[in-house]
Length: 601
Image (cartoon, rainbow, N blue to C red; front, side):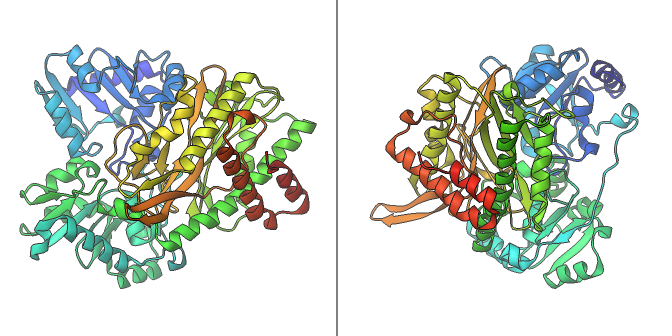
């Protein structure tokens, strides 16, 4: 096995031959998805760091890797022997990529693969590195990555109308009405083409799904559309004849995946190109804007992503259904863990628990796979927000806390749930921390807020109880959830950082406050919540959240005296709803177990 330090030294030789002083390697593909095929995992292969989010910078004399708080502990361990410096994003004193480069060089050539960065990123980088030359450099990593995996294209599936709620023609009409309202130039009757490179936006628009991307039910694809037609660029062999006929009947024209760039280049010069600068690769943007007729979509995240975020009634019903199906699997796993805790007939490892979820979820006919790599983190492993199980993982003992964060794709919706389970004796501090995390989760769940409220305005509700005891978590409180799409979906969020997107009815998000004690334990409790109409008064419209997740919340670690009456009532009502919704689908022994677990406090 080649060590990371040796790979980077070989890579520096290639940089030197190409006249490149500095290169920046992201964790993305040309579609900017969270999960990518092995083919694009250049950063991971070079650095040895396996976390999903990081940026590697290599210069002729040093290297550094930037990642966020979810991966600090993991990165510390995996970069130990690599000579790569760890840059902890969000921590005071950590330089930005540009600041660090400027501390190493006064000038030089910065080579980036323009297929893997947005035009917006390149613009910002060029501005901040004004004494450097930033140029396109398609990394010739194949020269040292001799067994690099190939790019895969698998079969594409159609999502039926009973699950999507709107056909592609109606979705296109909706999208175009929003474009015309937000981009005055288009009202004058000019011809335009909107360019899409985000696979989940395309899948939603065309009502298709695939399996090219790990954990995301997506095919590798591009798209373009105008007021009447969608051009879908995908692997032509991924469709059968019936699928092609069906899509064509909906004004979707299928073209080869690799023809997207030539399609843009050959467009008539009078046609206005439209797209989201932050979501188009620089290489595509350069083609689209070559005739000075490119308009950046002014809607945050782009019109398709923003429309997709507010689920229609069919999608909302699908989330309710998938929450019940997933809740049943959770109950079976939790019951088995409770039984093991009493009997301990055989050794139990983290991987065994992850496998239990797949087993019980697979009993449902609509199960379509896990929505992300399961996090089953026992004891000190729970302090790693994105802990990854290696082989069998850590053995579970009859003491301490077990953090389980797992989700699934069902044809009706996507789930993401976290529970922290007591496996045996725990200390007083764990109980206090558990209670404060739960108080934060309940506070956000109970929120009522006016139309126009952004996630950053609500974030403090989840953090305040932990702040009161001098503790905090660094990751976001809530991310959007796709409808049988990506488990992490924008453009809405609930986090400290400002996000201009207002929360609207139909938006589904996670609610996951947490606390992490390095080397000791981690506690996180997560439900999915959906924004809904609450009331209309003389002061305007008000919204609230509907909790979707149906998994019992354990009271074993709870210090009940720290809860307010309203928090106790919320918890009792929640666990009662879990019992009422799930018990009709459970055999008697499981139903009795669940009834006991959901006993009011």
